Amino acid sequence: MADATVLERAPKAQVQLKSASAIAFAPNGVLLVGDGLGAVVYAFETGDVTSAGAGPIQIEDLTGKIAALLATTSDQIRVPDLAVNPASGNVYLAVARGAGADADCLILKADRAGRLTELDLAATPHTSVTLADQPDADKVDRRGNALRTDTITDIGYADGKVIVAGLSNEEFASTLRAIPYPFSGPTKGAAIEIWHGAHGQYETNAPIRTFIAYELDGQPEILASYTCTPLVRIAVSKLQPGAKVMGTTIAELGNMNRPLDMIAYRKDGVDHILMANSNRGVMKLDATDLGSYHQITDKIAGTKGVPYETIAALEGVRRLDRLDDGHALAMVATGEALNLTTIALP
Image (tube, rainbow, N blue to C red; front, side, top):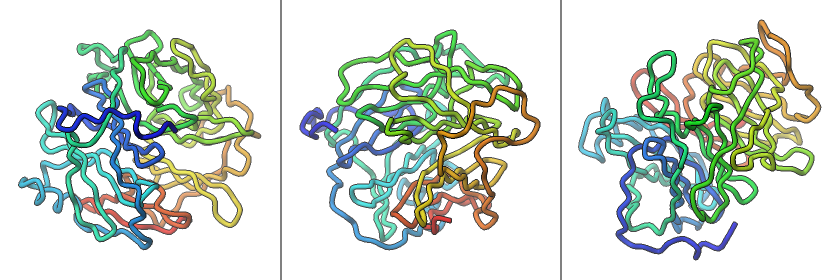
C-alpha cells in the first residue's frame, strides 16, 4: 500500500455520488467507494486509524436511526453495503435516501457505541478513477433491468490493486477490473468467462455478485460467486486490461439463489468461508484446501465441489464483514427493519 500522502488533499472538493453500490477498505483506513451509476471508484483517506476498542456492536432498527439522522422516514432508506475498518473497528455504511436516480447517496460511520455520523466526502482527502467501459445507458437484461445498475457489484483490495466486479459494455460483459493503487487513470477491465454447472453452459454476461481476495499457493486470487450459485477461482495475475480470462468453477452451491456477501476466517486452525444468500441462508464452507478441487465442467442438478453446511441460527443476514478474529458484523433483516448485530464466527 502506498503512503497515504499520495492521495489528493483537496478540502471541499465536490463529490457527488450517484450511487454507493459497494464499499470496502484498503490498508491504512482508506475507504473504497464504488459508484456504479456514476462509473467512478473513490478512495477516501478517512484518517480513522486508531483502535476504537473491543467488544460487540449492536444497533437495533438501523434504518429508523438513519432516517432520524437524515430527517426522513424509514421507508426512504436503503443500505446497500457495509464495511468494517480494520484499522479502527468502526463500521461504515453505504446509504441511499430516496429511490432511483433522485436518491441522495452518502456514507455513514457507526462507532462502537452505535453513534451514527455522516462522512464529509468533500472535506475528506480523496482520489478517484473513472471506469471507461460502463454499460450503455439503454442496455437492459432479459428481465428489463438496466445493465448500468450492475456496473459495480462488489469492490475489494488485493495485491496493491483495487478489484472491481461488475459489467462493462464489451461483448463479454462480465468484468473484473484490477486497478493499480494509487490510481493513475482509467483501466480497462478483464472479461470473465465461467462454466455454470447449474445452467449447463458457459457464461460471459452474468456479473459476479460478491467476492473475496484469497491467497492460494502463495498467490493472490479472487474467490467469486454468481447468481445460482457457482463459486469460481480467478488469479489476480490474469486480470490484465483487455484480457479474456476463464475462471475455475470449484463449487455449485444451488440454484434459485443470489449470493449477497462473503468473508473468510480461521477458527481452531481451520480455514472457512461464510456466505450470506438471498434464499439459501448462511453457508459455512470448508476452505481447508481450495486448490484441491477440480474444475467443474458438467451440468449439475444439485450441488457439487466445496462442501458446506447451512447455519440454521443465522437468518435474514444481508451483509457481512469480519469484526475481529472471533466475530463478524452482520446486517440482518427482521421484518421491515434492518439491525446491525455482532455474531460469533461459527
